[in-house]
Amino acid sequence: MLYGALEAGGTKMVLAVGDENGKILEQISIPTVSPEVTMPEIINWFKDKDIAALGIAAFGPIDLDRNSETYGSFTTTPKLKWANYNIVKAMKDALHIPVGFDTDVNGSLLGEVTYGQAKGLSDAVYITIGTGIGGGVMSNGKLVHGMLHPELGHMKMIPYPGDTYKGHCPYHCNCIEGMAAGPAIEERWGKKAIELKDDEKVWDMEAYYIAQAITNIILIMSPQIIILGGGVMHQEQLFPLIRSKVKELLNDYIKTSEIQDIDNYIVPASLNDDQGIMGCIKLAIDEKALEG
Ligand code: ADP
Ligand code: ZN
Image (cartoon, rainbow, N blue to C red):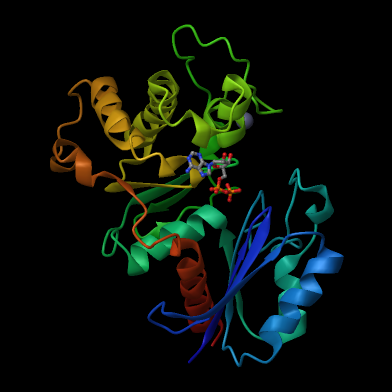
């Protein structure tokens, strides 16, 4: 049986067809313009693919409450052309198949938990550090939604000593997204993150903010693994810095085997940047099982 996958990002849409093992058979990506321009292209591509169900992992905030009239919509997204647009309804109306839906980061987490390094774990967190910062959370084997969905990227930060940067988030200034996402690095230092590769201070500060967020997440959610993805995490020197700062912040308060073996606890994504699209396949499989 074939399944469709749609990773809806703010800059691009990734469309794929895969099988129940998460194997991707065909994939394209198109720019995210507006519902009027982009949706007909997406529908056209999936129309003849003979897929049994579709899984969508989308940028947010989105309405994931199945009892809500607006279930399946983007809500207060700053990408204004998409605000209040119901992408699930649009795809269901066009394709007449079950459509699974979750956040982009829950999608990536689901990919890692189903097909990647977090297979078999019941409690896991996936954080992306890119244009924005977001986190997907699985607790007791279930992706966490709650009243909306976790918004880890907006937790408040204690500033790095001497960091006077006011922060990039229009809502909270110095939340982690405001202090540590790609655009914050670029605005603070006046250069693109990738051009700052050799500047130790930049990455020490970056690791400080990420470690602070991770420490809070460990204390609140007690995950069995923390997976870091997104463009900024291509700076691999961040990993040892983050791990040692997390240890420092925990200050030996938590002494599990996972924390002792922190190199295998705070880890890069394992699926070659396909974790999101593979997670969409699993969303499709689960929705098919649910709706029959
Ligand atoms: P998005 O978050 O838009 O889906 P990415 O995860 O690729 O996309 O994140 C883009 C951000 O990551 C940009 O701010 C960019 O400057 C930064 N970035 C991309 N590649 C690198 C890299 N190799 N090193 C550091 N920063 C990077
Ligand atoms: Zn914020």
